[in-house]
Length: 248
Image 1 (cartoon, rainbow, N blue to C red):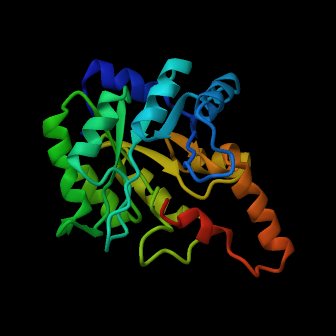
Image 2: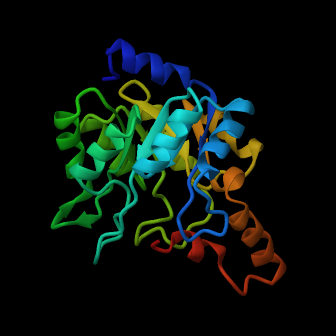
């Protein structure tokens, strides 16, 4: 059942039919600068974004100081012998919350990390930080259904294309996403994230029932935008997604 908490509901309803911009940069990215994410967030707010998705406590703090939009926070930490990297521990979730994010994004897939399924962290975070809104990042419908049962406030196919079974994927699975919207809309907010590169694709997602759409690389990461072009121009001799997926 969707949350009845008035503070949470106000934030979630403010996203309706809107664009959330992912403003992230890694320290080894060619565009890295201490001020870059704050400038990205300011530009996103100027352009009409309803929220920001951000990585790492220091970047979350910078963004919260720069704009007055709700922040979906995560903490990418690459775990040895696991494909899980989005907020993989309770400690990471607490750091995201303490940095000022209203929403905590978690890997809520069936992938294994630290001897258990990643999704098992979700109820622990809800218990430890009950004030937080939880965004469950999943890779398929079954994981989305499970995350909702575990109490996720938001669910989205963020990790479609990043798990062992979907690493060959570049385009979104619109049919599976439509099923999420139809079946889960009364239990949680379904937000599209992943592989959305044009305004037209974002509109398709809203038409299918998305509460909102998250777009990142197509807006805020010019090095990846360039690599998508050069990948095609060179006859697909290189795969830009390999660079996007690598551990930092």
